[in-house]
Amino acid sequence: MSTIRLTVAQAILRWLDAQFIEIDGVETRICGGGFGIFGHGNVPCLGEAIYPLRDTLPLYRGQNEMGMGFAAAGYAKYHLRRRFMYCTASAGPGTANLLTAAALAHANRLPMLMLCGDTFLTRLPDPVLQQLEHFGDPTLGVNDAFKAVTRFWDRITHPAQVVQSLPAALATMLDPADCGPAFIGLPQDVQGWAWDYPEEFFTRQVHRIRRQAPDADEVADAVALLRAAERPLIVAGGGVQYSGAVEALTAFAHDHGIPVVETIAGRANLLDDDAMNAGPVGVTGSDSGNWAAARADLVFAVGTRLQDFTTGSWTAFAPDARLLHLNVGRHDAAKHRAATVVGDAKLGLAAISDALGDHAAPEGWVADVQAERARWNDTRAETVRPGNGPSSYAQAIGVVNGLMAPEDRVVAAAGGLPAEVTANWRTLRPGSVDVEFGFSCMGYEIAGGWGARIAQAEREPEAETVVLTGDGSYLMLNSDLYSAVLTEKKLIVLVLDNGGFAVINKLQSNTGQESFNNLIADTPTATAQTRVDFEAHARALGCHAETVDTPAALGDAFARAKDRAETSVIVIQVDAYEGWTTGGHAWWEIGTPEVTETPSVRTARETVEASRARQRKGI
Image 1 (spheres, one colour):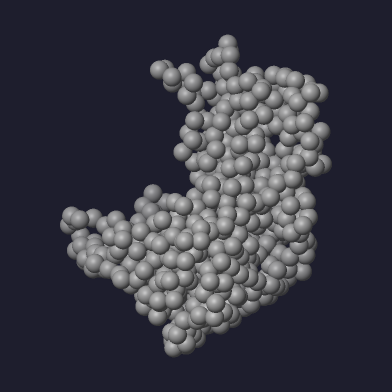
Image 2: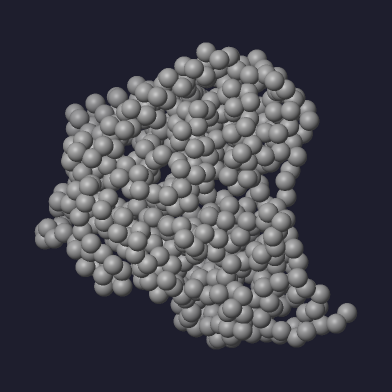
């Protein structure tokens, strides 16, 4: 067997460069490149290994490691988990900054590879710069914290381990059921150690995403439940898109007359005007979606982990409704004692549809759901109408949505925008909405948008990536505006300034408390009431920026931004108290004080607890 002598770092990069995936009959590299910030823990060896492959595995310079991870997540989500980016960070705080991003990728089941510096394996120079010393366990360090937020974790302590570790990490990232981030710790000395690697290890390899066929008996059980149901309802999650099952889902719904509601991750499974689209469901859902959920006698969940915002903390569905889950992951399929079909969504829908034959749900059920959806359309149109009260998130969403092209992508996360986008967005093309609510992570918006734009530019360079962010998220992490400018990956960013963390202020008020520490104006220690000049800040980062004062002016500015080649930031002040979408809300379990001296807090607790009787008790 012929061999080639390489360092650990060189072997890792050379192996990544040789891994391809077949997508729609076309072979392309699985790894689209990397995001990196160099330090003493990764630049001497990993940096040396990255440089010769910079054309095939381009390295994007990050401004903050957490933002790099968010960008990698946005990239993977755009590519429906079939491609990923690596992130490299130095030992110590650089690597620690990736923890939040790893948790986001883990919660959202997204592939991301982290190649991070570690302390010296020999320990001869200990304690080294940025090393945490644990007196009773010298092997324990910052990198061990990633065990809780990754699907695959390893620390390379000998060059030969690369041959086993890298394929195992990739297999995890490509597995439909176990997909998530992979972490590989690289001690600073081991990175540079050499070994005689088999040349065969670096030959071109083409991978395919596994499609697990469903069990025939589980399909038969599912068919029996669907045939017996009088009011079946499909709950479509993000797994529908990852499976490439959007067309299969749409055909299934129409062929068998079953309305569809969408989760937050499943937004943009069906077109807005699809006759079987009953609207979003759950805490941030629609009146029509929640109406259908409350009356369905069979809930057919496809590709969803049934997060509490989908289930209304398990009050959105009728107490006696049967649950049927089609999911590639056994963990998700078996929740709440559901009848399970473990398998790929596309194959599962096809198998169940074939077995159902020409069976369809009662027409009266579909007609009732469609009538509710028509009423919701009227409600939504009034909610987003400019001039309907003070400027609001919803009005801004309506204006932008009306100017988007079908191929354009919208990105939002955390705060009040996920609820407003989920409830009010009209899907123009499947898969065009990225609302990060799996981890509900403030700061994802701009960085995730940058990663999505890198991916989008590979396939649809004329399309736009539009980022919606509040002022709170903007202040938390905005530096990747500069990344977008540096890399000429155009973003259109809307900064909706409501003077603080307004949606949490709303929750605070709704639970009977006084407003405090959320809005800038209500922060006791904020003695200088100074509003941020977001326009000037964005200009300082190299963006075109302008401030508008009305939704109509926002539309004009957005049209100009679409015509412009560079990244644009549009700022508009919106009301912190009025204009929130009030319809379509399911109950949401929140912790409230059992003992309090504040009457309004006591009243709020009683209101919250009043709905608990409807909550399913795990069955």
